[in-house]
Length: 472
Ligand code: BYC
Ligand code: FE
Ligand code: FE
Image (cartoon, rainbow, N blue to C red; front, side):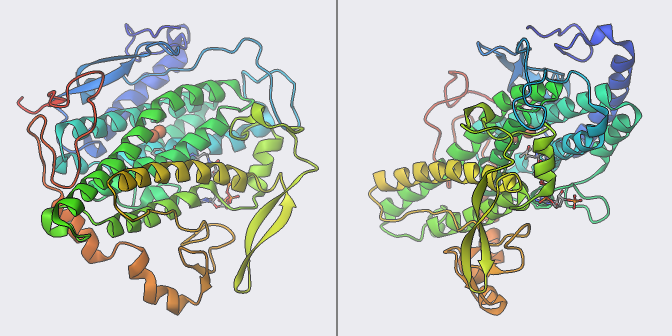
């Protein structure tokens, strides 16, 4: 399934056969570009960036690499291949053929899911727009810009569905996706984490590690959808997502590696005077980004999630791998809940607990990431371990939003929690210190003091490759 690049909007959905849709998307395109110029990456819009672009959607070599100026990036519409006769895998319609059109009774619900997914994509670009100015290397700058153009393409993916299947309200929603603003008081982005700031590169790496990882789990659940165009769109988005997770995990890992190097070199755990970031500060950034990302899974018990599932709109992570009836009308699962000063596990209907089930998959996956960072610390011979805070720590959504929980999972009074907050979350002074390290390093092959070089370059290029040509 190769992609038609002769069109104004590259696509593999035979857009030229549907003139109305093509016209509608071509009308939206300049609005997207205006948004990109105004709220996309600040600076670097006229520079050549070594980017990958999708050329086909099959597993073998879907990408080509080359220098592109970002506004000329070929944002387009790419769906994974048809799976032949695909059947709905869960819920009340299990076993029926997947829908190629939207079932009327689920129109509003599906639109809401698609809009929520779509909203996060431009939000993250807005959150990251100032980072290029303080890049720790050309290699990292290129990775940031790659992530940003791909989040822009993820917006295209959802806008395609809105235009193709939702008529006029879809077109209005597509405009609204360009109108909301991350962090705005009047017209904010929909989900909490996407209104937070991403002020420095440590936050960026944490965001791509923890918040893009929510994207992996949400997209994988939507990739099971009975609405086939949504499923195929999300399947292809997941292949792009893998790079964002790589940027996050390896980014944090390189900061950890550099800190360990400085600790050994100077025989101290306080590396700030040598231009590094203490492990204790890295731990606080983990606490912040992990807890805000856990909220993105919604409440532990959710009738919304139950309805999405029963209706066949949003499945579970790797739905076919679950060894059960794929309807969940009879089963239960344990869900954590505060009871006085304790956190207890209660059996609840599995259908209502789907958000929690997905969050659990995410928690396992996040733990594996932390384990890999700890291996870097252990291999350096340092006795310290990073750790995920308890899932109830600092939650704003769900069962734990009214209680104050420590990273160890102890319920304490609001006053006690506030007294200790500075031990758990980055203080203003620590954020300022991390900010003070953010000085641009733009000579090929050079890296800022606080981060180790990567083990290898992008697409077999050397580490000192000119990933962004800063001379115009
Ligand atoms: N912030 O029944 P509940 C990504 C609302 S990330 C604010 O518990 P539900 C990416 C909720 O909307 C993946 N509000 O939740 C990453 C509901 O509102 P109403 C994004 C929240 O509906 C990095 C109420 O609370 N994709 O791709 O089961 C870079 C009660 O809700 C939040 C998706 O999210 C929150 N955190 O689940 C770029 C997939 N949580 O009805 C991109 C689509 C809940 O009272 N979205 N609420 O007005 C969904 O599947 C669901 O909307 C959610 C929430 C899982 C988010
Ligand atoms: Fe995305
Ligand atoms: Fe992403």
